[in-house]
Length: 110
Image (tube, rainbow, N blue to C red):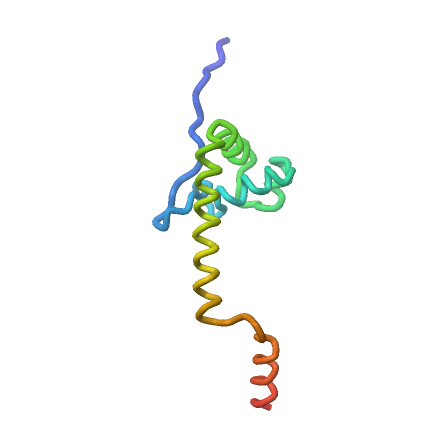
């Protein structure tokens, strides 16, 4: 009996917004890679994200290990974008004193 060896493509795809996700799920590449880098095993990642198949988690981690530089560049760009969005939101909606403003609004409506 011979074993048929086939290459398995990484189960990742880019959505309409440019976010890389594990295929057929809403879980991002960022999520899986960050959990892995924080020391989670594939099994632990699967427990945290039950929509992921264990075999897909291993394939995504394998993809990360073979393409570290590209993935790190992608993650850095995602973090940069998140920082820009956070700054824009904080400029529009100043977070300083938010608790006091909300409490005052609550007290006025009573």
